[in-house]
Length: 212
Ligand code: 5GP
Image (cartoon, rainbow, N blue to C red):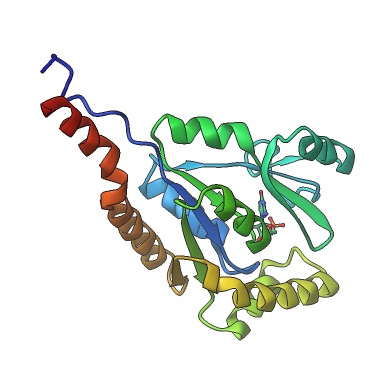
């Protein structure tokens, strides 16, 4: 055996996709998760939506014009993209790929159409769907947020129902009744996913090659 035979190849990071209807609290859960699991890297999306009060370009989103967004699509710079309630949203590709290669886990907080595109490219990703405790509670959360007009609230509720129907494509579903509990469940899922034997095979094959 050579001196570095037991040095295992760096494991690729896990791609985590977190979806769930607008207002379910994905943003709050992600923010809490980033505090308690700072190693998880958050992917900042591009969007044509206008910034909400307090949102910062490059932190919450990369805010783009429609023309700029179209160019990202044309030059294949987005891993996935979707139109959601009259605006475009997409995940910058290079950042995600490089971060996964460096061994870090990356979380995408995206809607369902985009998540299904990601699943085609990264079937080994971990797809988590966040559910509200009830539909009434979901509407209540969107209304309380106070950032949307009545018409947008109606559209978001209608999209929410369609999104929940697509939950079957996900690996896990978590009810977001308490942010801390939802985060603890995501951490538990990730701990288990990192122990999946499939993720260990490349290392074990390397060991076996060395002893043969
Ligand atoms: P919001 O306008 O409330 O920030 O986001 C609207 C929806 O777009 C949410 O469901 C959010 O998860 C989703 N979203 C945010 N970024 C992306 C993205 O990069 N791609 C896709 N497909 N959806 C996104």
